[in-house]
Structures are given as C-alpha cells and as structure tokens.
Amino acid sequence: QQQVKQSPQSLIVQKGGIPIINCAYENTAFDYFPWYQQFPGKGPALLIAIRPDVSEKKEGRFTISFNKSAKQFSLHIMDSQPGDSATYFCAAGQNAGNMLTFGGGTRLMVKP
Amino acid sequence: DAGVTQSPTHLIKTRGQQVTLRCSPKSGHDTVSWYQQALGQGPQFIFQYYEEEERQRGNFPDRFSGHQFPNYSSELNVNALLLGDSALYLCASSLPGITDTQYFGPGTRLTVL
Image (cartoon, chains in turn green, orange):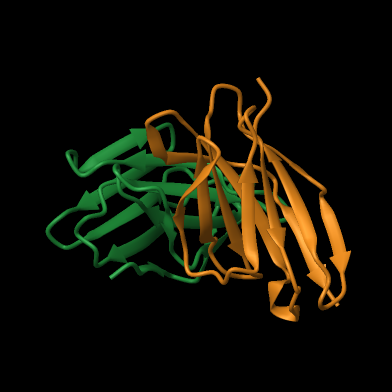
C-alpha cells in the first residue's frame, strides 16, 4: 500500500530531447507528489511538486502530469541539457502525514 | 539563508560501535525528518521530530533513536552498528504545518567496516 513504483531505472537522451519518468502508487490517501533531483554525493533537491487538485503543473522546463484515476504521475523535462544528468526520484506523501515514500530512482544521462 | 546542514560529511565506524549524526534545519523550519539512503536506492523514512518529540517512525529497529533540541536541531543515534547500516543518512526539514514539503541536507555518508 505504501509503495511507489518508478520507471525506467535509467534513461539516455540527446540534448534537447524530452525525457519522461513515470511513477505509480497504490495508496489513495497520498495527496502530495514531489520530484527530487539528486547529483552524486549530494542530497536530493526538491524540483517540483503537485497536489491532486490539478492534472498538470509546469515550472520552467519541468512539468508534472498527474492522473488521479490511474494513480500515476510523471515528470517531463523539456529541452533537456547535459547539466540535467542526475538521478530523479518521485515521492508521495500525505498532507496530514509526515513521511515521504520514495520511488527507486531514475538515472538520467543527457548526451551533448 | 542557509539550507539544511549536516555533520559530519563522512564517517567510518566498525561493527558494534555507536554513531551520532547531527542536523540543523533551514531557518524558520521546526520539523526534522531523517532518512536512510542505501546505494542505488531511494531514501527510506526513519522518523520525524517535532516539538522535541518523535512524531512518526518508519520500519527501523530501536537501535535507531533521535533527539530534537529547543533550537529545532536534531541528532540521529545508531547503536550496535551493523554492516547493513552503511548508507547516506539524510536530514530534511519542513515549515510549521507543511510537513510533507521537505528540504534535504547534503547527507552524512556512514561506512561500517
């Protein structure tokens, strides 16, 4: 019930491409869905987050799409750059709760 | 505005020893959560502290304990270290009343030999 499944595990795109990372969850009590970016040796940095009252949220080159009925959400990175090469984690939480449940991560490489 | 800070950066211990990790939250944040991130995996929730008390705990044994001080900083203690405790330990802080929006520190890399 608490699991968040993330795919793919790794992704390689050319500069300018649009990598898409997908996550699925089971617990319908989740109502907060953040994405984190992590570089080697660093802590996760909050990238963008969505709550289920909207189906899409865009911040700069990053877009979250959310499908409540399918219990899925995804991250799209527009005009990807080599500097976007990092590991991306989706997570899920509850507004009234305290813990975040993370997916397994996607290692993204953007080739120049 | 300083972000979440953690100390030490790296730590090497042997099996059976005890370790204390420290965390200072972002300015204005009163809630601290601790996570364990094994190599190649997503972070796993250990526990959360608010008003100097443990508010919620993940699936971790009692060897893992914590403390929060009046200035909101926090410590994570691990007793009787096992090889499997080797991981990156992350601290995250959040604003009053918005505990799901968490900001992470750089982590402490613990190696148990």
